[in-house]
Length: 186
Image (cartoon, rainbow, N blue to C red):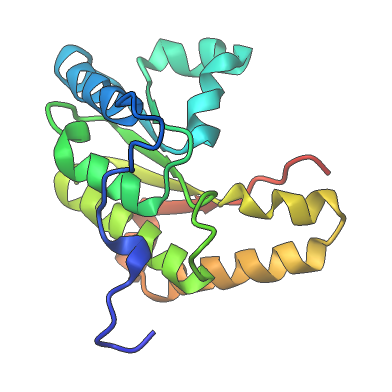
């Protein structure tokens, strides 16, 4: 990507209403209302990987006591999450920790573009929620490679994504941000 090109994964954009039922916008509006009504210590934001976390006992045991909010929407890309965060999902709350897990659905983007989209999300969070520790979980789009035991492909792609993000992050920011790679389904 040349200097003058805009990164498509870092341009905020509301999700298209392909079902015709306004489902995505309704979920976003509910999240904005939750920001007005609740005081979370932890905020999870991302795609279906975040959304599905609430179905498991570990959510009730570990995160519910922290008044955690789950702002995951299935199908979201980095640009959708960026749009949601710019449009109310970071207002009226002051969480201690914000967990970002997105990129799974950025199928049309390169690792560099996805990294840029995640970096845009992290920068926005840091600007609007400077008190929060930011944790970035890896993109799970590479789980298929892991399940096929193509670990080298997964490792190379994740390493590329992680090194791109880390190379553009100052040491002071590295002390505030944490990247975690979760290995699934091996």
